[in-house]
Image (cartoon, rainbow, N blue to C red; front, side, top):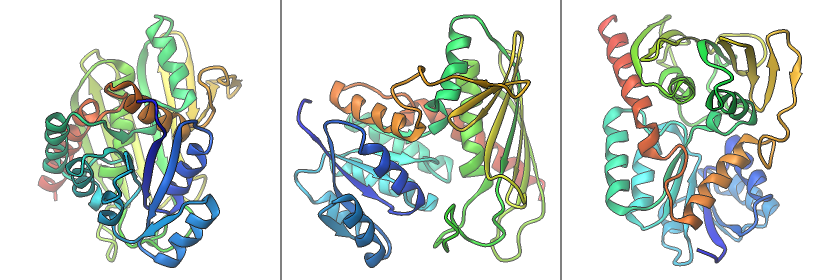
Length: 320
């Protein structure tokens, strides 16, 4: 595929804009449509990025004959249904994490992708951050093996707001959204499936209806372990911070940046063509379309993560 890839972006919020910023740096790609819940706000975003087509309905964009692909940055609860709509319309699709908020939803997407043969990728960004790519290169060359990962996913989100402090129309979830990053990354970096998983959660928020604190333990078949702490109550730096404890080194990854165990910064600027994990994720999506291949973090490759999340959900429900 040598022609310009024409893309629609659904979800013009905080994360959708990150994709638009990343795509500006990628040759051979043009965003031709943007979909948002509020027409006026969506028009503002479209105007800023020079996008001509604006709508509040994904179906309007899918009807554009020239459209090749869609990036979904919409509420979690819509991911599986919208991904299926894109595939049924003959469009390649990248859906932001999580792939679905249920095992059934994930299964349906994977089955349809296999049937259509289209590129369907999930935004498991940690696979693409230069920090985590550096650690993976160390593992692949035999210089480092993970003994333990200690991960903190912390936000201060006692009201229903997004990363920009704007009111959300949907409710976020520690397990199906935020834990998905770590569950997938742990198995991916270990190169070994998760064979044990345990979770406990704190009280359910009276109005949001979700647990605001959660703790997860994982063990891979190769013996490596992972401890993940998640909270919407933490009054401090926002985000997820990974400590890799290995047989030869300790690494601390904070998004695209990497440090050793003594908090000395490691230069990862030569790991990839960009220092922006979202841009690298999008580059992989478009390269897979052009090259007619399965992308890293395809829906099939990340499916095992959602099987683990399903088991953890069952465990939490059984424990009340």
